[in-house]
Each structure stands twice: as C-alpha cells, then as structure tokens.
Image (cartoon, rainbow, N blue to C red):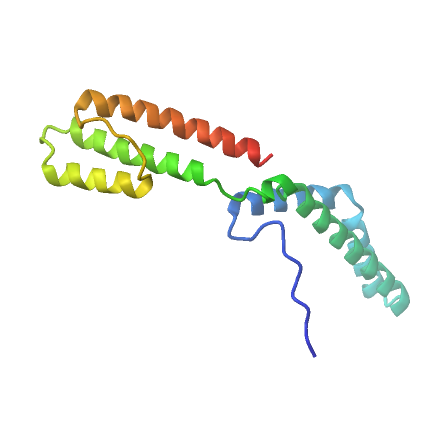
Length: 167
C-alpha cells in the first residue's frame, strides 16, 4: 500500500514570519466563521447524549470549516506564481557579498592598525571568488570608501530588482 506524498505547502514552519502570518490569518478566519459555535454545539450534543448522527454532523461541519479556513489562510500567504519562479537572485547574492567584503575591508582600514599585505591579498582573493570580472581600484582609503558607497548602492538596487521579480 503506497501512501501518496502530501502536496507541497506554501511555506514551512521553519519560516517564522510566514508561519506567524498563517496563524494570525487562520485565527481571524476562524473567528469570522461559526467554528466556535459549532464546537460548542458538538460538546453540548456529546454531554447531553444526543444521537451519534447529530454529533457526527456537528464534528463534520467543524472539520470542514477548519479545513477551509486553513486552506484560505495558506493561500493568503504563499508567494505568487511569479515569486515562485524567482526563488533567489544570483545578482542580489553577488551584490550583497561584494558590499559585505568591501564594508569589512573599510572597517579594517578605519582601525588605527595599518593593513598588511596578507589582508590585502585575502581581500583580492575573496573579491575574485565573488566575481572574477570585478574591476577593483587600488587599495587606498578613499578608493575603498567610494567602493563601499557604490557596492552598498548596487546591493540596494539588486534587492529592489529581486523584489520586483518576486511580486
């Protein structure tokens, strides 16, 4: 006997912001429905030994409401089809890595300790790993300061582009 695999969800519980959005939306939908009233009626039917048929009907109704609300809540938080087609942006990742690398070098250069050849060569090696075609200026404080400004601007632009693609 083969159990079919569950359909993929619009989010996972590891995604805390989406999970919280789902929970809040589900809560609102259940409050708007007559779910609590149906549950109370089912408890009343059970307590007063009403027929099994009536109890079953109430529980079935509650289950249908819960399922419907859960599906609605999930649909309200899953990304659009367009967003799913752009799960990540290589340009954004490269831009953010460049910004981080240059910002770290700028922090080192701002410290009173002069930078040694080792730090410079590691910076160049890491820069080449991010983008082999990246044209870097000579490593002076003013050049790196300008580069930090430019890479920050590029990272913001790439983030905006990625967000546009994910709409």
